[in-house]
Image (cartoon, rainbow, N blue to C red; front, side, top):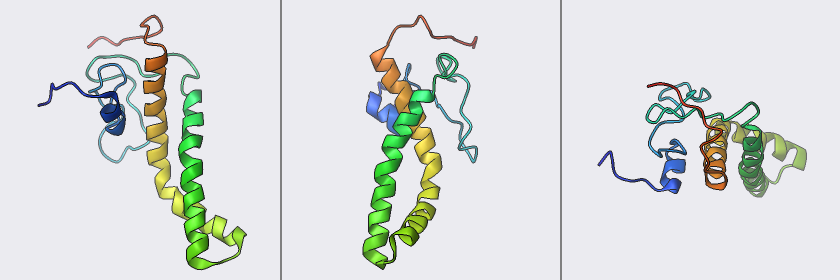
Length: 128
């Protein structure tokens, strides 16, 4: 059922548009850090204004710190090494998660912004 209504949490999980909940925010393939300029389904421009994704840095921090803390704790419990070495190894284990944290922080921020400010005044669209 491609036209079935989606929940907002499912749209966040699947990295979908905060407006229509179905368009891809990021293209498929290896271009993990590139973001579509606008939704391919509804045409809404993802960045409402300059500096729009500054708030996504807070979301990124909220996602990254607990993960890095868990990796550090797990490394410490498994190895018993000195703390500085544990932090270095945990940071290396953390690197593969960076693209996912980047993507999810932006999508979570866009959905949060949509829920807090659902007005269409600041939205721009591209002609489809």
